[in-house]
Amino acid sequence: MKLLVLNGPNLNMLGIREKHIYGTQTYADLEAFIREKAAQLGVEVDIYQSNHEGDLVDKIQAAYRKVDGIVINPAAYTHTSVAILDALKAVSIPAAEVHLSDVTKREPFRQISYAGMACQAHFIGLGFEGYAQAMEYLKKMLS
Ligand code: DQA
Image 1: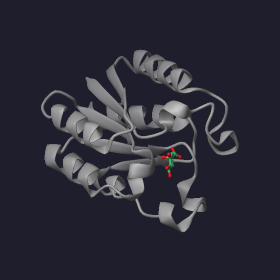
Image 2: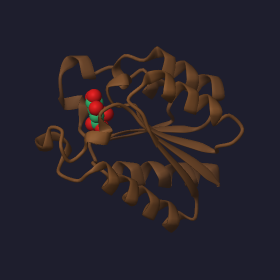
Image 3: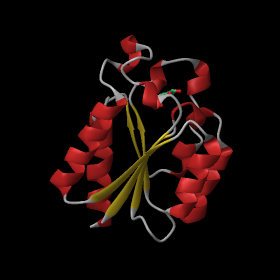
Image 4: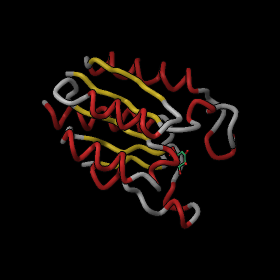
């Protein structure tokens, strides 16, 4: 089983950006956390981060027939990107949405999630643990 974990803009700045919201752990810490979880679950994982919307769309398209499940934190593109929503719909790969922070309790412009409309499950406000739960969810649903 192969999972793709996609992270959007500014998540590479974890540990530096708004620590009161996103914590002090770095993006490298997040990658290590995801790899450890993948090993525990016995799944293959490809982790990709980009600050560019089109790169994320390209990566989703490239996953077609190659990846069994997608964990996605589109970051700011969550709230703006119909292109990412359409890409997820185009490939029809089971997907789970993750947000480190609890976006439901933040600004009004964060209350819409376009990508989330193409996701079967949502793990919001759980920090790194949200990625672990999303991976577990996909493993279970795909087994
Ligand atoms: C985020 C929440 C988004 O609103 C924000 O733009 C991010 C990170 C999160 O993981 O909490 O960059 O997706």
